[in-house]
Length: 390
Image 1 (cartoon, rainbow, N blue to C red):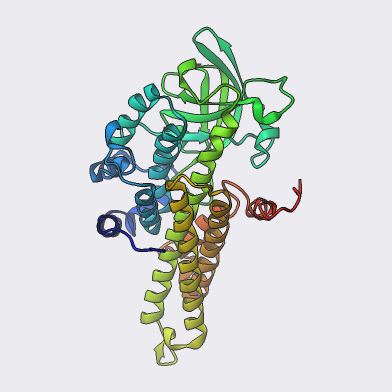
Image 2 (image 1 turned 180 degrees about the horizontal axis):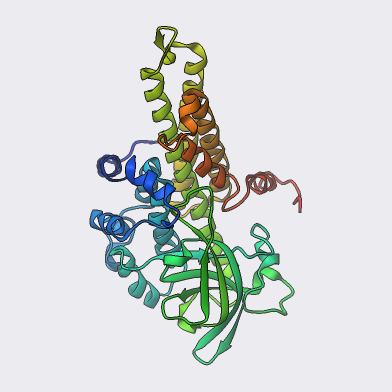
């Protein structure tokens, strides 16, 4: 087994870390989190990220990309999240819900149209699955419908908690296209729905206490049109296409929370070295050292399961179990890490001048999104032959 990154990947990590330390960590991340009007990164930051060339990182060369691997996206996302989870999601939503989904399931025409634009950072994507009636119960809760109308489909319904839909050019949306099907998994289809200049779509951002710079949104479809050629995969087979993207999403959430855990560890160590009590740095006390040691141990374990899941996905091997494990363990690791960080920083930890409170709130969101950790545990148990609990 070889856990070593390539020289190019090491260089990628160091260059992204340098960018994060200079452009994101600190004032930019805090302002993005604290200004209620900022629900997405500004155009200037988007341009800076574009200039890094990283939207092209894992897009194949024949479609205008660099031709790297999914591991490159893992490295980028983890490093961005170390500075700001919101910035990491701005990158990950488009590369994941856009590039990866199209690579998994797109036609050649779709790949040649969308992938070069994604590689250049010209368009943004969001994934629209969750509805007011339920999120985890995807097969049973989807009531948004799409019916054929000439060369288009007409979409009606509602989605909620859709990250960054308010800035997206396209929505990767799961809708019901056969309301009579006995098997629910054979009644859904996936579309790339254009948002701009589409009068049948209304998007309302929601105020949150976590990852504020990547707003979740409510979406209303009222006779919204989507070209039939924008169907991703086969008619009524959208669930099977989406599963590939869901594994990707869970691994990327693990990357986000690993980045948060890394930031929490670094901040608690730095504080423990400079803060003194009873005539010596608090980092000299056993109680503080144990919090640091436990966090470092859990972070290392979280990275290992995440990298394994990412390697399996990149290799085209089954990774349902590992993706669920990575999302579950990494999100809980980050929440524990930030909780310990609050203990170490004390009163400073809950002030907005320090970032630990942001790590705490952001990691808490990831314990139930995009799938609850309770449901992740159920899914993991099922992989060992236990019956479904629902």
